[in-house]
Length: 189
Ligand code: G4P
Image 1: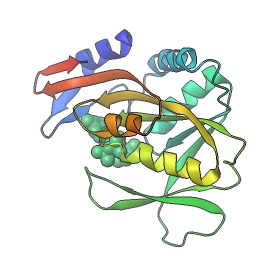
Image 2: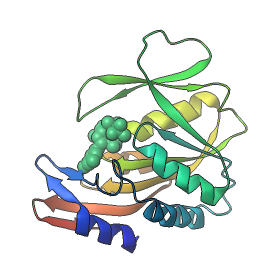
Image 3: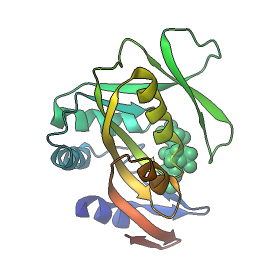
């Protein structure tokens, strides 16, 4: 999506260690007009897929998912990073490893909000190693929900997540795919 790529070129900052900082418009300060354009694009791409719910993960996916959901006219469920080890039986639960921060997060969704009748669009801001999307796929599987695909804002195509998720047969629609980046340069696929 040209608009997102141009914004990344203009305002994105590549930091050491392959991190793209987009906190001026995507995941700290949020440009909701841009989010609406992104939502329209996913709605176009996934039209006719029967999506009845969007599933995302806190924190940064939530804002993007909410604006996208307005285009689909469906609710958003966000998977919560649980701070308690005391996981009760009324939730779906998955452990998501973090490659950047180390360790794992316990991630939960209440069984009240996902089930076999659901047709999900997964949304997240970044696709890097794919751990977050794999966690959301596991939660969908536990719920018996079907997955129409995943909408990602920024895919770092030089990291293995996109290939891994697509190899599972999941449709991934990334609005900006970065082939390579370094201080002062960003190349899109
Ligand atoms: P994944 O997102 O594909 O699972 O990959 P990974 O485990 O490597 O990512 C860990 C966290 O770092 C994720 O956020 C992810 O969105 C974020 N991330 C990965 N690459 C970049 C990057 O280049 N720039 C920025 N800004 N973030 C990146 P998180 O810690 O799970 O959640 P959140 O609370 O930040 O949303």
